[in-house]
Image (cartoon, rainbow, N blue to C red):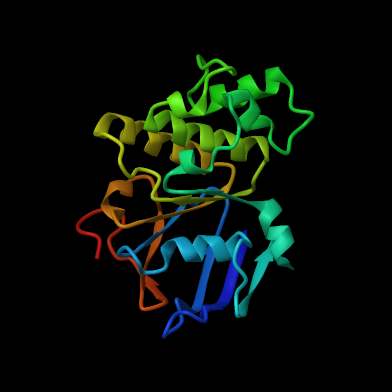
Length: 217
């Protein structure tokens, strides 16, 4: 369980805090969601949680133990909205092995199978994959790292409906053994997948109502 308590983030270039006294709890097996408009601070929230940006105030606890920024970078796996922009490997195999020198071909293939890319060659170039395959590869990278907290930034953006449904099912499956947080401007797409949610407005969170049925507001 990851607890985020009293998080505040106010960059010098912003007239007001991007995040102000934000608190939330992420539990294994209970995927959560933060909704908000573009520019509301959703991506910033993920970057601060995973230690890529330094909070001005706040505490982070994993199973009740305080975490430093470095520890959060190991614990959390962040998948950006357009993960293909962050791929560094020339092949799928190289991408999976970044920072994982002892990764065997058998382990890499098993992880690809887990995310629905079992037929993909390790020699395939990531830029030649479809959008849905690139999202799955980005998730596979985090599974190789054994990230205990998955942070997903607009994971269905730009995907057609068929691929979107497949990615949603994958998210539901991955959340069974990990804490998982999705940020999105389309919360209605995650009905039936995500159990709890908040809306981020003016730097603060409020509960997202009717997440299982009816309109999300």
